[in-house]
Image 1 (cartoon, rainbow, N blue to C red):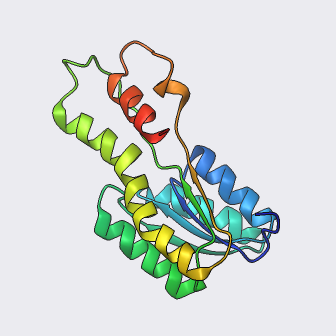
Image 2 (image 1 turned 135 degrees about the vertical axis):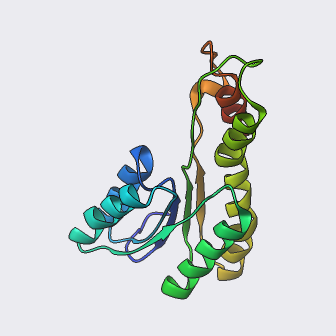
Image 3 (image 1 turned 45 degrees about the vertical axis):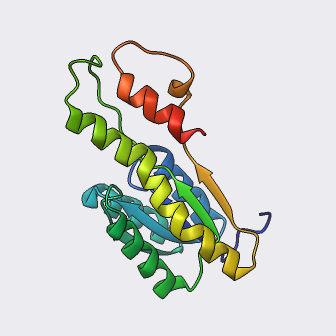
Length: 165
Protein backbone atom coordinates (compact mmCIF):
# COMPACT_ATOMS: atom_id res chain seq x y z
CA UNK A 1 0.00 0.00 0.00
CA UNK A 2 1.70 3.15 -1.21
CA UNK A 3 -1.08 5.73 -1.17
CA UNK A 4 -2.61 6.04 2.29
CA UNK A 5 -4.90 9.04 1.71
CA UNK A 6 -8.55 8.16 2.40
CA UNK A 7 -7.69 4.54 3.21
CA UNK A 8 -9.43 3.17 6.30
CA UNK A 9 -7.27 1.85 9.14
CA UNK A 10 -8.79 -0.27 11.93
CA UNK A 11 -6.47 -0.16 14.96
CA UNK A 12 -6.81 -2.28 18.10
CA UNK A 13 -4.84 -1.02 21.09
CA UNK A 14 -5.21 2.53 19.75
CA UNK A 15 -5.23 4.20 23.18
CA UNK A 16 -1.57 3.74 24.09
CA UNK A 17 1.95 3.15 22.82
CA UNK A 18 2.43 1.91 19.27
CA UNK A 19 -1.32 1.98 18.61
CA UNK A 20 -1.51 5.68 19.39
CA UNK A 21 1.63 6.45 17.38
CA UNK A 22 0.28 4.48 14.41
CA UNK A 23 -3.01 6.40 14.65
CA UNK A 24 -1.13 9.71 14.69
CA UNK A 25 0.90 8.68 11.64
CA UNK A 26 -2.23 7.54 9.81
CA UNK A 27 -3.85 10.90 10.54
CA UNK A 28 -0.81 12.71 9.10
CA UNK A 29 -1.13 10.62 5.94
CA UNK A 30 -4.82 11.45 5.49
CA UNK A 31 -6.21 8.09 6.53
CA UNK A 32 -9.63 7.48 8.02
CA UNK A 33 -9.24 5.88 11.43
CA UNK A 34 -11.25 3.40 13.48
CA UNK A 35 -9.72 3.65 16.96
CA UNK A 36 -10.43 0.56 19.07
CA UNK A 37 -9.47 0.05 22.73
CA UNK A 38 -11.03 -0.83 26.09
CA UNK A 39 -9.49 2.18 27.89
CA UNK A 40 -12.11 4.86 27.14
CA UNK A 41 -10.31 7.88 28.68
CA UNK A 42 -7.02 7.13 26.90
CA UNK A 43 -8.87 6.25 23.70
CA UNK A 44 -10.57 9.63 23.85
CA UNK A 45 -7.12 11.27 24.17
CA UNK A 46 -5.96 9.49 21.01
CA UNK A 47 -9.18 10.51 19.27
CA UNK A 48 -8.72 14.16 20.26
CA UNK A 49 -5.12 14.12 19.02
CA UNK A 50 -5.98 12.73 15.58
CA UNK A 51 -9.10 14.83 14.95
CA UNK A 52 -7.10 17.94 15.89
CA UNK A 53 -4.98 17.22 12.80
CA UNK A 54 -8.13 17.11 10.68
CA UNK A 55 -8.39 13.32 10.49
CA UNK A 56 -11.73 11.61 10.00
CA UNK A 57 -11.90 9.19 12.92
CA UNK A 58 -14.31 7.16 14.98
CA UNK A 59 -13.66 6.08 18.56
CA UNK A 60 -14.97 2.58 19.36
CA UNK A 61 -14.55 1.41 22.98
CA UNK A 62 -14.20 -2.36 22.68
CA UNK A 63 -13.19 -5.34 24.79
CA UNK A 64 -11.14 -7.22 22.19
CA UNK A 65 -11.31 -10.41 24.26
CA UNK A 66 -14.94 -10.71 23.19
CA UNK A 67 -15.49 -11.72 19.59
CA UNK A 68 -18.96 -10.17 19.46
CA UNK A 69 -17.53 -6.79 20.52
CA UNK A 70 -14.78 -7.01 17.89
CA UNK A 71 -17.42 -7.82 15.27
CA UNK A 72 -19.56 -4.89 16.46
CA UNK A 73 -16.53 -2.57 16.16
CA UNK A 74 -15.93 -3.81 12.63
CA UNK A 75 -19.62 -3.29 11.80
CA UNK A 76 -19.46 0.27 13.14
CA UNK A 77 -16.35 0.93 11.06
CA UNK A 78 -18.05 -0.34 7.91
CA UNK A 79 -21.17 1.71 8.64
CA UNK A 80 -19.03 4.82 9.07
CA UNK A 81 -16.40 4.39 6.36
CA UNK A 82 -17.81 1.64 4.06
CA UNK A 83 -14.49 -0.23 3.87
CA UNK A 84 -11.42 -1.41 5.79
CA UNK A 85 -8.05 -1.23 4.03
CA UNK A 86 -5.57 -1.72 6.82
CA UNK A 87 -5.87 -3.79 10.00
CA UNK A 88 -3.45 -3.04 12.82
CA UNK A 89 -3.72 -5.64 15.60
CA UNK A 90 -1.84 -3.89 18.40
CA UNK A 91 -3.84 -4.75 21.52
CA UNK A 92 -1.59 -6.41 24.07
CA UNK A 93 -0.94 -6.82 27.77
CA UNK A 94 1.81 -8.30 29.94
CA UNK A 95 1.51 -9.51 33.51
CA UNK A 96 4.47 -10.62 35.61
CA UNK A 97 4.46 -13.85 37.54
CA UNK A 98 6.09 -17.25 37.65
CA UNK A 99 4.36 -19.87 35.56
CA UNK A 100 3.12 -21.85 38.53
CA UNK A 101 2.03 -18.74 40.43
CA UNK A 102 0.19 -16.84 37.70
CA UNK A 103 -3.54 -17.53 38.07
CA UNK A 104 -5.17 -19.37 35.18
CA UNK A 105 -7.54 -16.44 34.62
CA UNK A 106 -4.47 -14.20 33.99
CA UNK A 107 -3.06 -16.70 31.47
CA UNK A 108 -6.43 -16.75 29.72
CA UNK A 109 -6.69 -12.95 29.74
CA UNK A 110 -3.23 -12.50 28.22
CA UNK A 111 -3.94 -15.12 25.53
CA UNK A 112 -7.28 -13.56 24.68
CA UNK A 113 -5.94 -10.00 24.44
CA UNK A 114 -2.64 -10.80 22.73
CA UNK A 115 -3.64 -13.68 20.45
CA UNK A 116 -7.37 -14.31 20.16
CA UNK A 117 -8.17 -10.64 19.54
CA UNK A 118 -5.98 -10.87 16.43
CA UNK A 119 -7.78 -14.02 15.34
CA UNK A 120 -11.21 -12.43 15.85
CA UNK A 121 -10.31 -9.35 13.80
CA UNK A 122 -8.61 -11.28 10.99
CA UNK A 123 -11.42 -13.84 10.70
CA UNK A 124 -13.84 -11.04 10.01
CA UNK A 125 -11.71 -8.51 8.13
CA UNK A 126 -9.88 -10.81 5.68
CA UNK A 127 -13.13 -11.75 3.86
CA UNK A 128 -14.11 -8.06 3.82
CA UNK A 129 -10.78 -7.11 2.24
CA UNK A 130 -11.09 -9.93 -0.29
CA UNK A 131 -14.61 -8.81 -1.26
CA UNK A 132 -13.40 -5.22 -1.69
CA UNK A 133 -10.89 -6.45 -4.28
CA UNK A 134 -8.41 -3.86 -3.10
CA UNK A 135 -4.92 -4.34 -1.81
CA UNK A 136 -5.53 -4.48 1.92
CA UNK A 137 -2.86 -5.09 4.52
CA UNK A 138 -2.68 -6.59 8.00
CA UNK A 139 -0.09 -5.89 10.68
CA UNK A 140 -0.10 -8.12 13.75
CA UNK A 141 2.06 -6.57 16.44
CA UNK A 142 3.99 -9.04 18.58
CA UNK A 143 6.94 -8.73 20.90
CA UNK A 144 10.42 -10.15 20.54
CA UNK A 145 9.51 -11.77 23.85
CA UNK A 146 8.28 -14.74 21.83
CA UNK A 147 11.90 -15.48 20.94
CA UNK A 148 13.87 -14.07 23.88
CA UNK A 149 13.16 -15.14 27.43
CA UNK A 150 12.75 -12.75 30.34
CA UNK A 151 12.31 -14.42 33.73
CA UNK A 152 8.91 -13.97 35.33
CA UNK A 153 6.86 -13.36 32.17
CA UNK A 154 5.91 -16.84 30.86
CA UNK A 155 2.36 -16.04 29.72
CA UNK A 156 3.50 -12.94 27.85
CA UNK A 157 6.30 -14.90 26.15
CA UNK A 158 3.90 -17.66 25.10
CA UNK A 159 1.38 -15.15 23.73
CA UNK A 160 4.11 -13.23 21.88
CA UNK A 161 5.33 -16.41 20.23
CA UNK A 162 1.82 -17.35 19.13
CA UNK A 163 1.08 -13.85 17.85
CA UNK A 164 4.23 -13.86 15.74
CA UNK A 165 3.23 -16.99 13.81
